[in-house]
Image 1 (tube, each protein chain N blue to C red):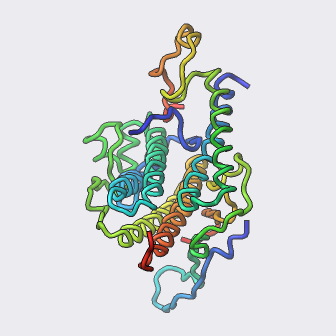
Image 2 (cartoon, helix red, strand yellow; image 1 turned 120 degrees about the horizontal axis):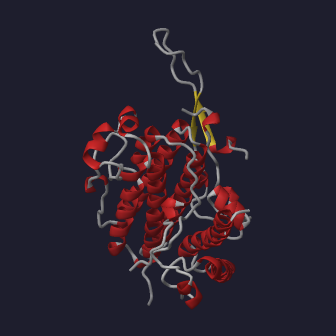
Image 3 (tube, one colour; image 1 turned 45 degrees about the vertical axis):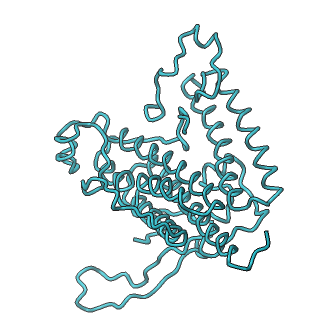
Length: 72
Length: 189
Length: 88
């Protein structure tokens, strides 16, 4: 799944007096619904099995999330 | 009325005895942006919104109760056979002396649920914007829970629940669009 | 595959079919004039009820909207029998 279209990044100010090792780039979520204020009819659909697994009948509404992304 | 279905919305599999994780999950059980708050918020707002959006609020509220049951299942399984010592080590000592092994509508910090978490303004746009915000806050909470979960089965269920918040948020956004279509063009009936 | 696993898998089929209905119900709530979607929604409800009947014929009703067979009662099925959903 290509998540990059549903993520934003910014570079926070880094102080030399920050006590923790600084994270240079912070990532945050821009979920699919931000870009679809009204769902178009006829979008591609998941199979019932895949729909339950992913959490939606429509793959275009799924952005996924995992610890491995390292957002927090 | 409602009819009980003897099944979960999503098959939840918990693999660890893990009271610490149970404590964290309580944020979505009895917390401000949790499933109980969501279910009660929508179920109460639906009486005073325009007819075109009553269905959305009713159906999403009903689904939130099934999410609440999933959370309860996870918390129940994670703590079911834990000893008082294990509970205490997990920070659930205070919970144990008050509630034993039972569940309670507390957040992860042990603060009991309160109706001040939710609002009903009697103004459809104010209510729907609160609902969209509630879905995004619940999504964020699920993200931080996924980051902290060390049980693969729980992580899988949390991933499903997070995705549902995306879909619900979209349906509330669509509800706003539906109401915008009601703008006072002098209608001929 | 033991009986428990078989039940789990058949229940999963019900959960999958029901989930499609959940999704299409929410969609048609905000798209009441999408005729294609309404047709699919109807079909999804039919399919979900077919899959449910398959499960219930083996393991008993999942809700009180389904009629328990007299054989089920004969072999000791009761609505209040375990496991409840959170106990599985």
